[in-house]
Image (cartoon, rainbow, N blue to C red; front, side, top):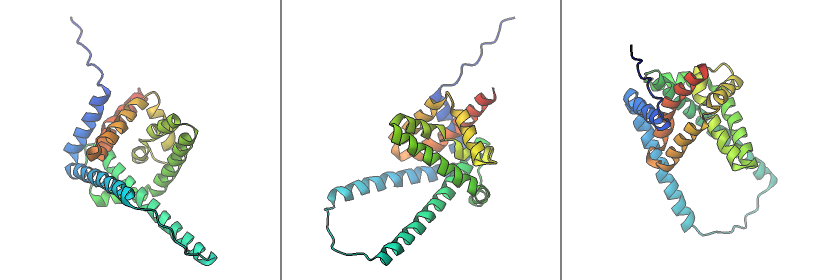
Length: 219
């Protein structure tokens, strides 16, 4: 009796493309949302570059008292904290939608918000830990920073899959991507090059990569 030929292992690009296709098929509205924010982000970068090149430096002779300086510091601190909170919520809702797409589901905005609200503190800690590791790597050398970016790219998705604590999520993401950093790097490189589709490539790629790495980790 002849042996059946084993199915060849899917290539890295195939995994990424399949993830993008699955995300698009499972959650069309979310996919178009990612496309729109990618286009808006690309346009804002172009506009910012044009404004910076056309603006001329100006000098001001205004003096700031100690009280005004403290007030400005408090205002900026509050604004910075709000930006972080909003950013974590947006990242959490997108990651939850990505995790749901892996399972073949398309959650409502309310469902994504509720899930993110329940995991907010873990998401916040994961974001801070990841940022510190990435910044530390970039300060040492560029390559360790890029490695850290790839290593913890799946951490927000893992919050909804594994997340009982930020440390467990970070360790899981680290184990997942061990010896598999190249596929994550290819995904991020593609999202950086193809700017109008950057978010769709990034999160669609995660839909394909995350379960693939999880299965490898189990094996």
